[in-house]
Amino acid sequence: MKCEDCQKVIEEYFDGELDEQASIEVRAHLMNCEECARQLEALGDEQNVYALYVRNVDVSPALWTGVVQRIHEDGSGPKSSLMMRWRRQLVALFGTPRLSPALTFALLILSVGATAGLMKYINSRQAQTQTTAQKQPESPAPVAPSKVNDQPVENTGEKEREAVENGDEQLAMLDDKSEERLPPVLKTADRFESRRALESTTRYPYEQTPEQLVREAEQKYRAAITMLARDAKRRRTLLEPDVRERFEQTLAAVDRTISETRRAARQQPDDPVAVQYMLAAYAKKVEVLREMATYRAEDRDIQ
Amino acid sequence: MMKRLAIEGAGLGAYAGTLGMNGSEELIARARLGEDEAFQSIFDRYSRPILSFIYDMTGKRDVAEELAQETFVRAYKGLGSLHDAEKLSTWLFGIARNCALEHLRTRRRDAHKVEMDDPLVLNLSDSEPLPEGELLNKEFNEVIKRALDALDEDKRTVFTLKVFHQRSYEEIADITGFSIPKLKTDLHRARREMRRRIRPYLGNSYEV
Image 1 (cartoon, rainbow over the protein chains, first blue to last red):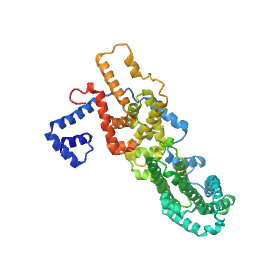
Image 2: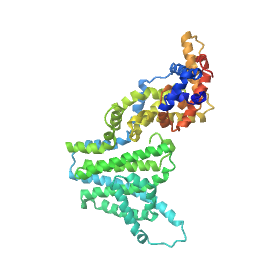
Image 3: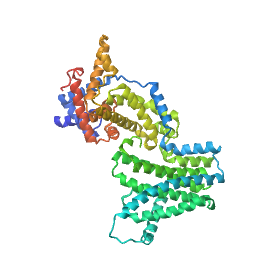
Image 4: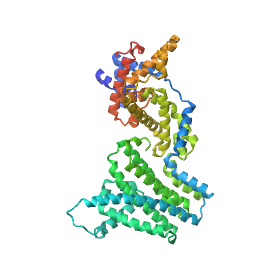
C-alpha cells in the first residue's frame, strides 16, 4: 500500500469502519511508514481534545416534567396502543372483559356505524372525483356500468379477497400491478355494492347474526382500505424514501396484526373482545393509509 | 383465562410478540401499551445524549432543552412506527435532528435578529475575572462551540454524531438519510475545518 492510498482510508481505519482485509493492509503500511503513523496518532490526539469539550447543558427534572405535561395536554399516546386503550375503555365501561351477546351486537353496530361514516365520507369524496372525471371524455359512447363491470368486478374482487385472506393486503394494495387489476369503472361498482351492503346493514342490523355483522364490518373496512390504498399508492412515489419505508413497515406490522387477530376472531367468533381487536386492527390500517395519503413533510417525525 | 391470554397475545402479537422481552425491546413494548414508567426509562437512558446532540446542532441551551422535549413528545406519539427495537437510539437521534433542522431553518428566516442571550457568551463578555483554569476551560469550550457553529448543517450533524456520540457510519446514514460516500466526505471535511479552528489546542503534532 502506498502513502496516498493509506491516507485516503486512514480516517475510516481510525473510525473502525474498514473491512478486515483493508485494515490488515493499512496496519502493515503503518508499521513501515512514519508519516502515516503520525497522522493516525494525530487523529487520536484530536479525539482526546474533543473529549474534553464540556457543554453548558444538563438534563433537569423540568425536562421530563415538560414532556409528561405536553403528552397529557395533547391527550394522545403511542398510536399502537390503540387496541389496548379500546380494551381498557370497554372494560371500564362495562365492568367486565367478558361481554354479553347483546353487547356484542351493540359493539358490532358501533363498528359498522363508524365504518358507515367513513365509507360515506370516502364515497362522497370519490364520487366527486368520479363525476369530474366523467365529464372530461367526450368521444366514447356512454355504456351502462353494469354491463361493462360484470366480469372485472367478479375477478378483481375475488383476487382482492384472496390477497386479504392470505394476510397480504398491503402488498396487494400497493403492488404496481394492483392498479391494473382495478379499472376505473370498478370503483363505481364497488361503491354501489358497498352502499347496498351498508344500507342493508345499518337498516336491519338485528336481522343478521353476529358472524354476518362481523363479516360485513370486515368487508367495509376492506373496501375502505382498497380505496385509501389507491390514494396512498399515488402518494407513495412522492414520499421521501425513508418516510415511505416507515409507512410500509407500519403497514406490514398492521397487516401482521390483522392476520393474527383475524385468526383469533375466527377461532373464537363469540368473543367480542377478539372481534374488537380485529376491527381495531382494520381501523388502524385505515388510519395509517389515510396518513399516508395525506402525508405532509412537516409530519415526518410523527410517522 | 387461557383463552383471554391467547387473544391478548394475538392482539399485540405484531408488536410485543416479535420483540422479545428484554432491554429496549421490553421498554418499547411496555411504553407502547401506555406505561409511563417504561417511557420514562427510555427518557432517562437517552435524554442526555439527545440534549447534547441538539445543543451541538443549535448552540443554544434553552433551545436545546425545548427541542429535546419536543423530540421525546414526538417519540412518544410515534412509538408505534418503530418496529426495530435495536434502532431506538438512531430513531431518537433522527427525530432530534429533524427538530434541530426545523429550528435552524426558522432561525435562518429570523437571521436579522442578533442573539446574544447565550449564557456562555454572556459569561465570556463579563468583565469579572475568572480563575485561570476556568477561563481556559471556558475559552476552550467556546472555541469548540464556535467551530461547530461555523460548520454547515450536514457537516455539523455528521461530525457531532461521529466524534461526540461515536456513531458508526451505518447509524449516521440511518439517522440522516445520507449515503455512506456523502457522510464520509462530509466527515473528512468537517474534521479538516474543525482542525483548522481549534489548532491552538492541538499542539504541534498535526499539520493543518
